[in-house]
Amino acid sequence: MGLALSLEQAGVPTVAVHTHVFARLVKSTITTHGMPTARNVFVPQPIVGRTPAELRGYVEGLDPITKRPFIQEVIEGLSQPLNDNDLKGMSFDRSNPRLLPADTEDNLQALFIENKWTDFLPIILPTEERVAAMLKGTSHPPDKIVGRLRATAFREEWEFNVEQVAVNAVMAGCKPEYLPVVLALAASGMSARSSSTTSWACISVVNGPIRNEIGLNSGIGALGPYAHANSTIGRAHNLLSINLQGGSVPGDTYMGSTGNPLNYSTCFAENEERSPWAPLHVQKGFKPTDSVVHVFLAGWYMHAGFGPRETWQEKMTRSMQAAEHYSPPLWVMDPIVARGFVDLGYDTKEKLIAWMARAAKLPAREYWDNQWVQTLVHPHAVAGVEPYASKLKAAPDEMVEIFQEKDINIIVAGGETQGGWKMFSANYRNGTISIDAWR
Image (cartoon, rainbow, N blue to C red; front, side, top):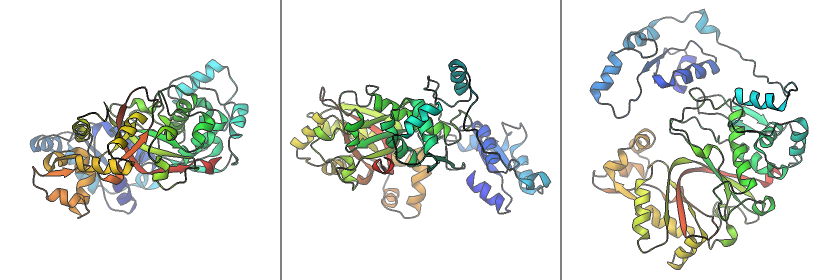
């Protein structure tokens, strides 16, 4: 869609082809870009895993949206001249009132739900007094621009300020002292409500002194709803991602096929005090005294296990082989597990990560038989980018490494009631943001 819009804006006749489930999203996107009459055609979903004959049937058949011959629509879209309606474009009034009219609490709760400004759980209504109290959690002025967000790469970015972030922090139930963490998450530019069809979510991990200052949980139940700070900060990231990027509406601004429970709230802290290893922020080049938050694009898979037991290598290798090839793992290990690996000679995270990268292998044919590897990795391999080019040259039964060391991360968290670990799908895209900068 983005390429088609660029070509149309340059005066090159273009018809964009989509699958029919994206019809509402296409209409919304072209309208947002001021080109509501851009030519588009549709084929049935799915296209992945279809035989050549089935795909030819799509092309030779009817557009499932208009019920007209697909090829005829393509020809007309490329050959018909633009008219005055095509050329006039659109303009938008994007202003929003700062305040809502006064009403009862029940009516306002219903209004927020009706307008999809919430996660459909009850919120703390963001009154002027509550927002003013929240703003005391930062030294930055209310009108300072924090960042920009959008649901997908092909939508416009929405710009927002400190006060707008504070509004969503109030709604989520945060305390003012949590606001610097929420502002850092907002400033990351990473939406917690990505519109990807694969139902991404976000995991945020906090390091540094602020963990203990605000009561973030890194012990028993660290990944669950067992601390006020964890629950409300993660929820605030999701709420601001709904309201400050233009929505998260199924079929329009959200296309996650199965959805993801991590979209409610996933924020926790690393248990630095009980870990035998350097914390993640020190690995990323920060000082131990810095407070930061790491944001991971996550949620395709989760595996769990215990250890390191006698067969830990076999167990962890199988888990990595079963993982989505395009989404490297984030390992969350109880301190018991971390100390067990130290006893085995892995006295740094880096040493264990190096073993993981070497152990996680698949036959080349299995590695390449993956939708997202084909879509997102294969072009780099064809262009000669390593290590993907070498994998593409490998024989079908030759074993190739799935992940690179730089993409694997380890967090130590847990209350030492069990030597367990969890492995999450989690892409780290240089997503470490200073919390101190937002105090």
